[in-house]
Length: 295
Image (cartoon, rainbow, N blue to C red; front, top):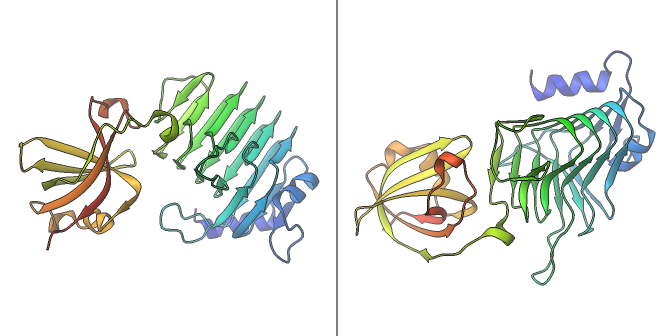
């Protein structure tokens, strides 16, 4: 079912439930205003736009609520409904003592702190809840933890882009997760892209460089874009994961790899401890920060 069809269903209501619409010129101008009027079974539809606020958006003690952002056109996540919390100590969205809540198609983040500050708030905080689903969201910024859970029975994280959170991507019953997992009871993670989390606590900048290597492969494995180079000087294989913000024509190369396989490309990188799948871990994990095609 397409986003347009879903939007139409939500706007007309399901089984008599009410849809509360947020946006300029709508019934509510902020998400929190709509939440304060919501009843069990209702849907909150947030139109495309940027919504800034100074405290957490809080949902307490409700069942069967769908909070749904309007889809749009964005390069990475296709999310155009942005929630920005200006407080460095509050969660962007806090869900407490709720059951059967779905959050979909939102970009949630904090205002980026200055270099001498740090953000202590999480992006999504979920406490004392059952059956929570977060899907098709971009969860990023300086938020300490992308999705923090406490006393939660049943959470589904599906098709989210979780990146650049200070400590980890997901915290679940004491487990700080940097990758998808299928061994924790009550947690389902499917199709998420999880990149560059824990950077301010776990980064280990062992080295950085600008070597030249022959491109031998480009793969997309579980949402991680990998560039594989044959080191021209030592004959070693370098596997580089593209870091968000990587400079150069990496997107063009990944879309048309056959045109570049066998070419000698220059790439800059940094080494980190680990952000990726267990099967990909080694003593040497490389994030590619730029790639260029020599003249």
